Length: 123
Image (cartoon, rainbow, N blue to C red):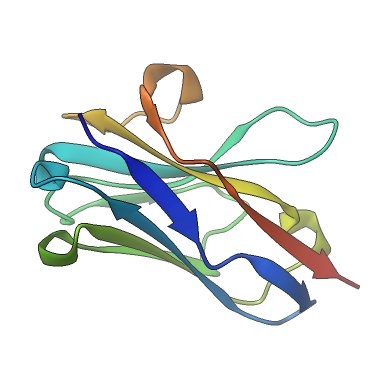
């Protein structure tokens, strides 16, 4: 199995940028597709972005296309989420998730989760 730890969240203003990291333990990280989800108070957990195990393909929610960028470095067992032009609507706890093999956009299909990192964007 893989164990995930998120970092990089914080309090920023509208238009600022943040870079989130998802660090995985073990040497099997390259076998997993990785996705980011977020959950704001009073809202359901939603898909943000995902990347295949080899990094050749990415998928983004419409709400973040053109602003967020996913990348991964399997040698470092780390996936990065670069978030630019942040909006107050992006405020949420961001979770890194992994599943063996292919990617999906449903959080219920992922069986490995990090603890989450808080992102707060003020007006």
